[in-house]
Amino acid sequence: MINVLDLNPSISSILFLVIVGILIWYTFSIIYHFIRFGVGRKSKIIALIFFIGSIILFNATLNAYNKIIWSEFIQYIKDILLLV
Image (cartoon, rainbow, N blue to C red; front, side):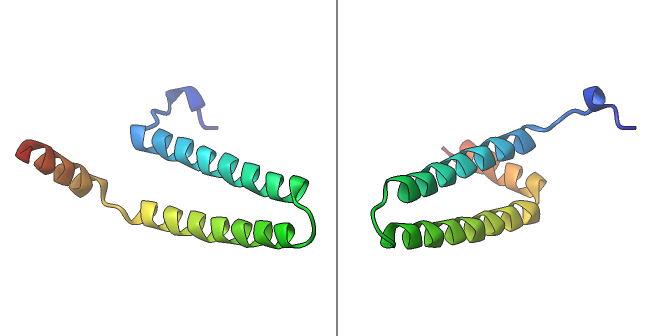
């Protein structure tokens, strides 16, 4: 059994979860308001298109996040900050 208290989450994983939470809340609120307060069928179609686009964007973001080599990225940021 995994002891959850011994796990040490990194800042990047916490930041990623916060960003995902904000994205999900934003998507939900847009879709909810389009469906709830929209009149006719067009608002429902727009909400569906927005929802599909949000799923595609989320998958692209998740894929890009997994392909980042964090040690090189952090070194790149340090180099930029030293130049300024």
